[in-house]
Image (cartoon, rainbow, N blue to C red):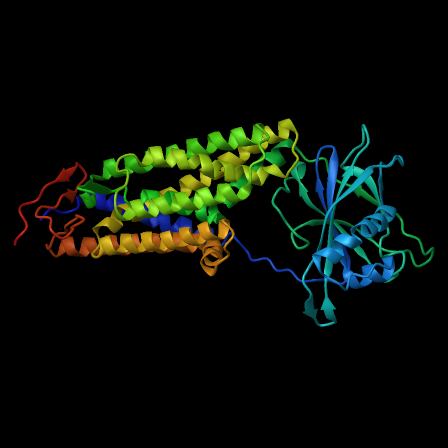
Length: 476
């Protein structure tokens, strides 16, 4: 019986140990966030180069009291009917200006009514309104006066919390909410004068480095929590150490060949999504999200089938590059609503892409020992097919969800993104335990067969550091 060379076994044990350490560190990187409704208004600002977009979250009860607009009827038709009155009321009470007093232009966008929630003080509901505040020629979106007294002018106990949710120049680029935004001020009525003083928004200047590095972090987070992107790459890499023969996976290739396949597939995926990300971002393409997301789900399904039965053995890199184009379009959707200038877009694209690649490389390195060693454990074929089946189920769930059929499988698969680190820890620990078990068997002189034995095969290749060796004829 052929045995795993001591030098290779030692090297893989070290790699697996490093994988456990690095993955354990990732487990501590994502603290949970909580949110709850509050009985005050909130204005969330997204700061751009020539404009500021604002999301106004207004308690329905206080808003109706102050404006006289009845929002008890929550139907879409009723809200549409009240939309002109809501916009007219807000236009009279939202007056941003430059610090010198020159008025900005305000336009209102979508309106929505949230669901009623039960709180300790009774039912609570919010009206959400989106607005775009455009600075005049020469205006500064980092230093301006926000004149706002909606609701406050009638409900004197009401307060308005104003926060910055997104600001590229200071490194705030991820989508956020009241709990993650940076508060810049509070608007309330002055009890002495019974007037509301405009809030001076005075933001720090920021830097190119802050914005670029924030995009790097966003790219890394996106690939870490983007379950579909990561799952596609991993399921495509799963059969990399295997040898295809007669439309089945039979035996393993040498470690060098397996690592080469993994490297080429990862590089091709990188090139594919980098190219489409750049074309989508600079081409200012209006890409519909649903077809792109359905394409990604389909790519995962194809990869899962390939892990069970070889569809394109030896051409995984080509397939990774092709499907990578679709994944890059999905990445570009993250940048689409940031309204960045040309310079900011170029820097953001570079930082975001580097973040994706850095995290992707780290995760592939963490998975590498497991991908190589798990082909040598007992029941390896069943384990591979189980992983492929679970992946296929997730892909089908996503595909149905993205063509308009919501389902619990898609929701469960989406939530798995918060457990990526735990998944890699399990893989790394399994690799370590497998390596220890192999070492014990070697020391006992029993030997290890490193093949992928399939029923009906008489001879089985063995994984060695040099290549695929053919052992002697199997008995029977």
